[in-house]
Length: 368
Image (cartoon, rainbow, N blue to C red; front, side):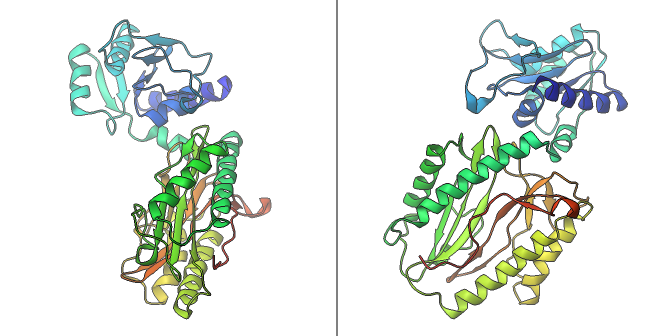
């Protein structure tokens, strides 16, 4: 993997050079991990004029969940407690003879930015912007493999829950059980707080589980994800509890399913982000559900659960191949509940079979 990380740093270095900066300071943890293989707590990455360094406050933790640093990347450990790796990295950049340093202004606090300026007042600070985030959008096959394994783990955990007795159990209890099952099957942990929503709560995006108990006839919406080697996937499904679905439940489910299918089918290299959103949204709009719809139909996933691209009405840009995204339309009816259906897919060209579905748990409306 050293060659992979070196190639990523090389691409970033080329962008920095083109923008007039001889060095860059990367502080956002997901970006540090992407470029260095690991992101020990508080660590930053210096792309120096003469040498790249992973700057740490203490010895890097040797934990699989934190990743393993690139063996070819030197590690600079601060000599004592209380030091700031970002400030130390800026000082090292100055010592290497640079006159400019690109920093992630969207991540650095004002206090940290001031501290860097006070230590290296002659170093011109430029904004690196979202350069690393943009490099992360298109995944290589090793990254996609990690997402695929994470999706398999999430599918397993969800499938086992559906085989258990659900009536009478609380949303909070079911969410905790799902997260335990994720770890049991090999996940680093949940990709985000697991959402379990029943009855009038069902269909809400990012619903926080409560002590409400599952009742006969409820809609049950579940959204969970697994983290595997740092990469995060997402799956969401909606079921009916205990009885045959009511007519209104079938109609609402079929509508959301049609919207989700339209969004999935719109995924292709070259497709505009907003066109994917429109494909799913217009199905719900045409049925009269234009109010209260989520702000976006989906988003990218990877080292973070919410990455670029954003599949939203005003989003600018077009999809590339090998970009993993979610497609997750939903409808919530206040006081009654609702439906959410959420998959993680990888954009692939039609010649390669079209979008690759990573989360394969059935989308049939099951009565549990």
